Length: 166
Image 1 (cartoon, rainbow, N blue to C red):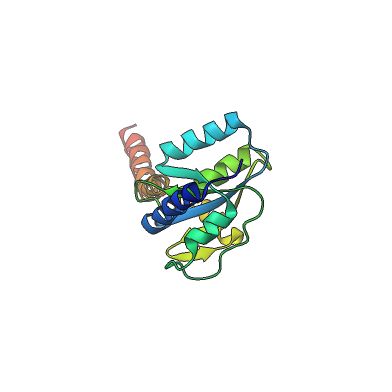
Image 2 (cartoon, helix red, strand yellow; image 1 turned 120 degrees about the horizontal axis):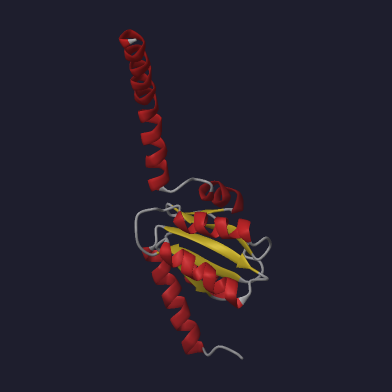
C-alpha cells in the first residue's frame, strides 16, 4: 500500500525532529527480524532511554537534506530503522544497545552507521562506539581500580598484625 504525500511529510517532520534533538543516532539494518524480536528490541532500547523509528530510506535521506550534520551519509541498504537517544546523557546507548542485540540475533539486525557529535559515521566507527561500556559500568570499573591497591594494603597490614600477635 502506497503512503500518501501527507503521511510522507509527517514522517519527514518526525525524522527531522529526531535528528535535530538527538545527540546520537544509529542507523540499523533489520532484514530477518521477526515481530517478536522487534518487540524485544524496542523494549530493550526503551529501557536504555533510546527510541526506535522505522522509515523508508528515501524519507530518511530527505529528512537529512539541508541539515547541520557534517560529512557523507553512510550507505543505507536493505530495510533501515533509526535508533536515537531519547533521554539521558549516555550518547553511546543507541549504538551499544543495537550492537548487543546484534550479537544475540545473528544477521537479524546490523549496525550500519549513524550520527555522532554532529557528523555522519560509518559502520566501523559505529561499531567502535558500540563497544564502549556505559558510563555506570566505566565508573564501577574505575572505582574497583582505585579500591584495589587500598584493599591489598589492608589485607597486608592485617596479615602483619596476625603474625605479630601470635
